[in-house]
Image 1 (cartoon, helix red, strand yellow):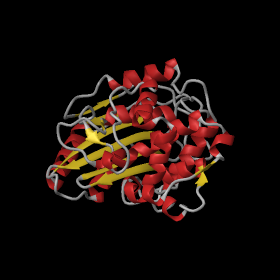
Image 2 (image 1 turned 180 degrees about the horizontal axis):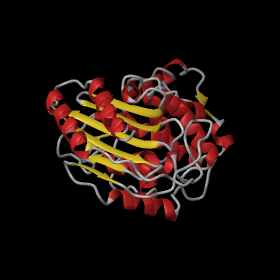
Image 3 (image 1 turned 30 degrees about the vertical axis):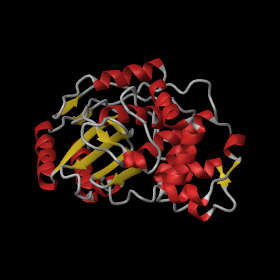
Length: 321
């Protein structure tokens, strides 16, 4: 459902700003802040504020040591931003450093599309060509529907659930290209994420080049805005989280590292040395945790390893139990 301006409420923006203040570049910080939580919905996520308990202490030194050990073991940089939306604890590691976002961008792109389109527009059939599919690369859904097309809503769903590249490019086209999505993220308060190219070129990230990069802190602020706060109306937020809960490419990532019984709605991304997962993780009976894990191997020729993301998630979520 479309709304006039896809932005967070003043209270939500203030909470995100407050959460961002304690970040330390290249290090790990944990901050206890009292912010509103939300009541559980049918997706396992929260929406309406509730009173939170006193934050439990976190073993910051232990988290720092564990993440440093993982970086050394895998020869990689690991970026983390985790926000417990129930008690306000924030855990950050390299949260202001830039990483390629790869396909994780498909989640906020779909969120903006949902916000800016009506149900009737989402039902309109979108068409593309075989050349579009060939140029985009990995397109398991749109590649099967060149002849007949799909409704715009199903195209966006394919981008999130199946990480379909042609679907992502069609969503970007509807939003006014990379520049249009970048402007939408800026309206959500993110002036850090740089959206510059379409699939598959956005995966080609080199050190020192800010194109198609973000930071864990910036991406977490957007994820919180669209998945927990009020940047989307409840129906659109529920749709987005349903798609993310059915993500077919994330089982070996945050889900693999989350404690048993914790519900994960996520969007993965990966190319070459880059492996990422951005997730809303909901412990039983608690408000959700916004978790962004971005990783890149030190050797640009090295291939990513899912286990690095899973083990990072295990360390972070274990500390926030």
